[in-house]
Image (cartoon, rainbow, N blue to C red; front, side, top):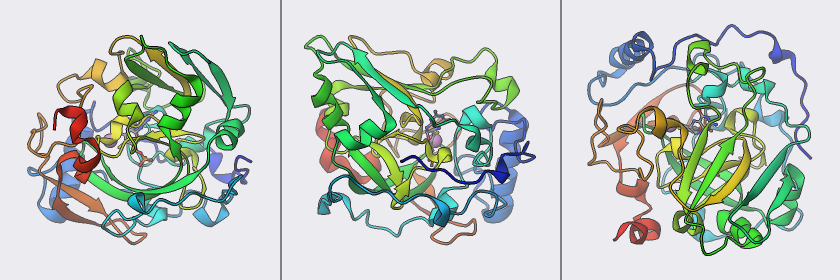
Length: 331
Ligand SMILES: Nc1nc2c(c(=O)[nH]1)N[C@H]1C(S)=C(S)[C@@H](COP(=O)(O)O)O[C@H]1N2
Ligand SMILES: [Mo]
């Protein structure tokens, strides 16, 4: 059921550049220069890399459509994000996936991700540990569509129709014990495949990990996506299954998950270990909390057309999802 598409784009790819915006000063400055030149926003918002070739990845129309085992669940509460969808071609070529490179142009490199035989091990402090194949995950939980706003800590944003199931459904299936307080999610990592920026692979706390509290995971909004725009997740979006927690900055949503562990303390996570001041474990979208290097008050909503453009808009607390999640944080 996973997508099988021809792979001419899998040649050594010239688009990966060895800089990472976060870790490399020159890359960071270049990002700012691009933005500055285009919109004069360099000092107001965070770095924004361009993306140059919308035709560099397999076009979405070649992706396998998702055929849900049962009719797709639709819940009107989660279908209107209050703004137009981001063009799917643009969402598919403007990505963060450090395992495959330090720029936004990682979609080609990410095609190396091997989906065959994928397993997601769910364990730790649970009564019913279980290892799921990707197909079993889809078959075990009714799939539904969720149109969510996405806000990266770098102050770019998009609007995406995910397909998947609530995290709560998986929690209920494995039955966390009373001792479980947090959950840790681990992304696929194999240095022979995930050849990201070479400097960034050394000495950093790979694999990519993220975490939530049990209460956050049980929230109605917390979601596992297995598809997007009506078809399987393309690899660059985190196939075959990724986290979506839309009230938090994008980095909290780990891609290509292989392990989910229920634990009894706040787990160590990738970005929080590298730069705790910029990537708080409990971070949510908080326009009034200044990022050490830029304001979070506004964001760049990337285009509703396939070419790279954006519109600057106000950021909202909890990315506008306060109605769902404010109670988690004391109102
Ligand atoms: N494994 C992994 N997951 C990841 C990342 C990453 O580098 N590696 N980047 C995160 C960040 S910073 C963002 S903004 C989103 C981007 O998701 P998208 O590329 O599907 O839009 O993925 C998140 N999940
Ligand atoms: Mo992000």
